[in-house]
Image 1 (cartoon, rainbow, N blue to C red):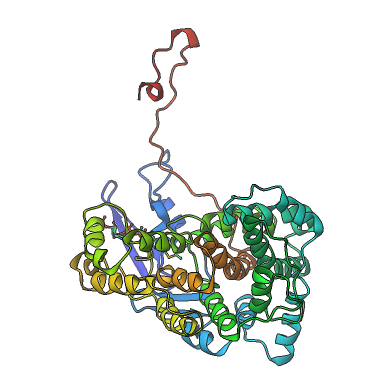
Image 2 (tube, rainbow, N blue to C red; image 1 turned 180 degrees about the horizontal axis):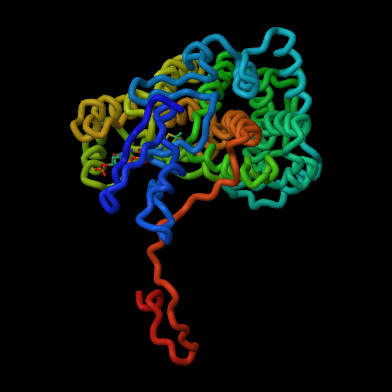
Length: 436
Ligand code: ACO
């Protein structure tokens, strides 16, 4: 019997219920016993957008939004960004521990040998319009991988799950690079197994006629750091989608495609693209005060600002600002950084943003770096999806192996009409929808 209990008295019946509190939560199902009579279904919680509902137990990522803390498996993000490679962090997220040298070498080797896509995958991609958004291309192609690996449906077999995890992590940069080259009409580039994960990605993006692509070390490392920062972020919209779709035991390619679709929205991963469009629209630092006034008057949002969980500076945005300076030493300073810094400066001093605890999030500066590296804004969310695939897969694996999890199926509060009399077609008046 837990020693923390909350007593709830139902004023309708004067009955008191003692509900156990465990790790700061009560179980929503414990409320079901709160009834006015035998016909009553029992009390439910109403929580649109999951503002205060824990949907799972997870040992992967810890966030303290009030203090601006982010940890993967207990390691602070700042330490991981400084000391690790992305694939080392991927191993940590998936298996719970940092790898030793032999484990890391083996892991890197395995991921590297899964970067190639089947030739039929190339052909699906060739079928898309030249001006298709790269995120739509990525989502569709990842879903189509389910046709290439039908055995992925066996989600209860740990060995099989691990194989699909390696394939997805290996192939994501290949598909992302193909979606970029498709939009330019360039031939696809095959992976180069001599290169690191990010250097190989750059090779598949940018190699032209040179026999061997040589990545700039500073840019490859900056991309690696950006990938570490984006690798997981506990129960965000896309991860919740991964878990929800995966809870029906759909195969991991389809669940990952669904998660990537959730990421594409401008309120989630799509915000990095919107930030660049916003900075373009602002044009110069003198226009920043007028833009902020417009936002405060209710016209639009400051994209890349605000977060459901962080009510303090997003720790990832701090590291990205640092990485931006390293990138600019190679590429030259992206002039949009001045507009972004001025936006941040004014927003952090403004009562509207202070009161609502709105701070720059991970997307605020990432697009500026990506643009300086030579990416166009439409690719930004694809760059987010590559590393987040690791987080989605780690969370999916945790969900599949959690004996408490079942198919995700929320309840609703029904607000529609009940048991109406049917009206034959000839006797129906004007329907509300056609009146507007
Ligand atoms: N600009 C201006 N006002 C904002 C912003 C913003 N970027 N974000 C929130 N607000 C305001 C809201 O209008 C609201 O004001 P009100 O209380 O007067 O109505 C208040 O702050 C609270 O905002 P909510 O929308 O209720 O907060 P929620 O937690 O639902 O939304 C979200 C979080 C979606 C991230 C929101 O801050 C937003 O839209 N930001 C811009 C888009 C963005 O950058 N998304 C990326 C998030 S990080 C990621 O997904 C990787």
